[in-house]
Length: 169
Image (cartoon, rainbow, N blue to C red; front, top):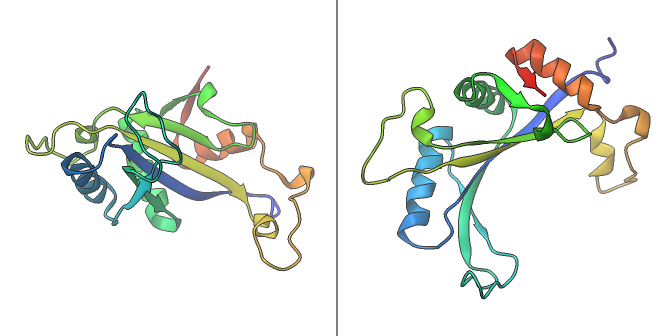
């Protein structure tokens, strides 16, 4: 197979929505740092919602972006928590997928800490092919041709081969 056509794991984004600033957000940051081994960035609200008491720019959650070997290792552990099963509706037509984990203590080696409490997280995985840089670069930017875009089946086959993933319909 041509190396430019092979699917590739671009990045894994792990996000916890704390819902409010303060101590709960600090605990969410601590959980993300324990699980991923990387310092999280704080996410802010994009707009105001009076029903929920949210103002624009208010800190609401935290996220970590993992790339390369760290992303590969974390995804292996996260899929182990999900028993290597993901629903087909979790995938996008371009092959990227997202899933949730209900509690951080489901990860191997994590113990429940009563000071922290229970935190779940959302995991979004971005799959690409080599050559996608042309859509992001500064000079001579152009769209990725349709024939070079990753498809759902190619992504699922790659994940079955690398992670032993089972896709449930």
